[in-house]
Amino acid sequence: MISIRREIYPILKREFNYNEITILIGARQVGKTHLLRKFYHVAKEKGKNCKFFDLEQPETLLLFNKSEQEIINLLTYNTDIVFLDEFYYFKNASHTFKAIYDRGCKTKIFASGSSSLQIHKHIRESLAGRKRVFSIFPCNLNEMHQLWKGDSLFNYLKYGGLPGITKCKNSNDILLLLSDIHQSYILKDVKSLLKEENIRAFNHLVYLLAERQGSIISISNLSREIGLTSKSVENYLNVLSHTGVAFPVISFSRNMGNELKKSKKYYLYDLGIRNMIVKDFRNIEDREDAGFIYESFVFLELQKMVDQVSEIRFWRTKNGKEVDFIFIKNRIAFPIEVKSHIKPGQVPSGISAFLKRYPQTKKAFIFNLDYEDKKIINKTQIFYKKFENISKFSIQ
Image (tube, rainbow, N blue to C red):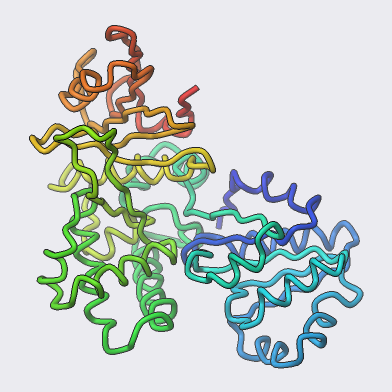
């Protein structure tokens, strides 16, 4: 088994220096528990008094069936740092965390959860100004290169980047792992958020999203196919988004008359999970959906780069001109197109149309398999970047 060095590790390690509650959020099996346990051992080695609570374990959760003061004592007595995995199972977590922080207690809290704070409004509001939140994603290509070496790109496109893959001995083990994670998500996270009788419809929706990943989604069409109301479909999509399993991407528009304004695309959080849902693990050169796989790969890598002043959108006009992604940082738009193969100097029609519409664009990017280069059209720099070097991507 290879231990993957996560790029977020040194960033999180600095959290020992902050008094605020550090919260890690992300989908199941992306490495949150591993990171918490690693920091637990690091703190122990430094001589800190630490406690670790896995709240998915029934016997551990029973310890929290007490008064608030007893729980505060449990967490803070003779404790420098406390780690709580899946803290959402602890019903009064936000109130207790707030009390610990507001009393000036010196105990540092690290917590993890599989749901976005958007779905736990009480936690988001009561811990305002008292928390530091970090999104944890599957490993990126650069991290998985530690496992796959020279075949990293094509293995990544097939199996994705969930850290548990490093424990697998062969491809069959990987498929078993991906299947188990998919089923565990449906049975655990979703069951607690939806009525049990709707799980089959939810599973159908997940399949349709995987099959049409990268395509514009119509709520009304999905509701007809699944046999549910549009409101129910929107609720399901919100659950997927708030549990970190699917990312919505909205359209980019500067109020131009022929641009789509309210359309959305969805991308599942990991390519291996997506391939498991559609049950297709052929090599990418043999697949009809190869273009969407490359596009999804680029999106997932870009998503890991989004911060407080940036976001990802797509651009499309009513007459069909389209750019795969618009990376917006500090309100400046950078078009990004994904092509498996492209001729030297070729500019995709979508990029050309976007530059005509937005001639002030400073930079545009084209990710591909073939080559890297740069050219200038009017005052716009066009950068050609290989997929394998996407970790080096920067708009600077």
